[in-house]
Amino acid sequence: MGLFDRISRVVRANLNDMVSNAEDPEKILEQSIIDMQEDLVQLRQAVAKAIAAQKKTEQQHNKNQVDANQWQQRAQLAISKGDESLAREALTRKKNSAEVAAQLKQQLDVQVNQVQGLKRNLIALESKISEAKTKKDMLKARVQAAKANEQLQSAVSSMNTGSSMAAFERMEEKVLELEARSQAAFELGGNDLESQFAALESGSDVDAELAAMKAQLSGAAPDQGALPAGSSPTATQAEGTIDAELEELRTQLNQ
Image (cartoon, rainbow, N blue to C red; front, side, top):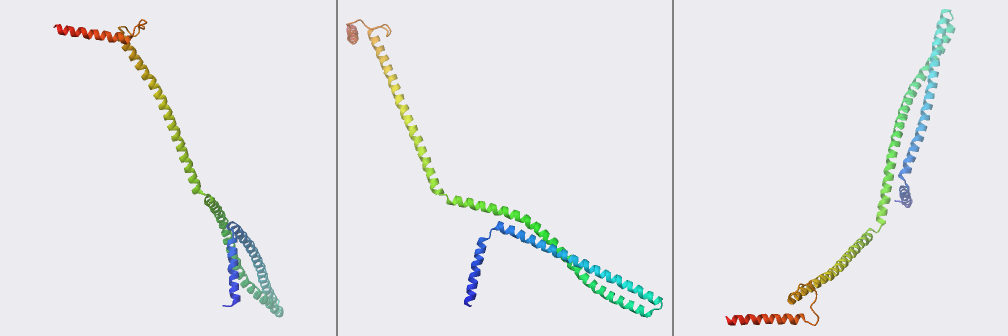
């Protein structure tokens, strides 16, 4: 392989790569429709020219056919008048016109086939362009959707999702910790308050029981007031109990 062939291949490969990377599907679709419409315009012009040529050939064919018929009639007229020389000349003209008409007829047949073929191609191209326009709109919508999805995926990929989720989870744990501490503080505060009230209630019970015992020992109800001044409730209670026990012992011994 020669050096110039290798260079040519490298240049073409790079150019193809640049063109492929530069191709925008939406723009290429639009340009393709424009190119097809330009082809359609050219094809219509070609069909119009072919039809015009066919009409011209048809007119020439008809004219020569009419001339041939006229020369035939003149030849007959000359024969009827006895002018053979004039009849011969008329027949010669008739022959020429008939030959030209025959050639034009062959040309006209070819042109008719060409025009019909061009018309079929024109109809097919119009149908393809209409279909291409419909597909173009669908493809453009798909291209836009694909680009939007690609942008979304790029945005999601560029986000540091892992660290964000980790930070979110850490904050969630902190919230749970704060809630637990708050609940614990509330429970501790409530227990202290409950214990204070329990102590007060317990103290009241002891005081009431003590007052009742004092009243029993003094022989008076708790609501009859205090003992006279100078007397000791404890000493009186002790003396009364001892006297009662002594009296009971004496009774038992006598019996």
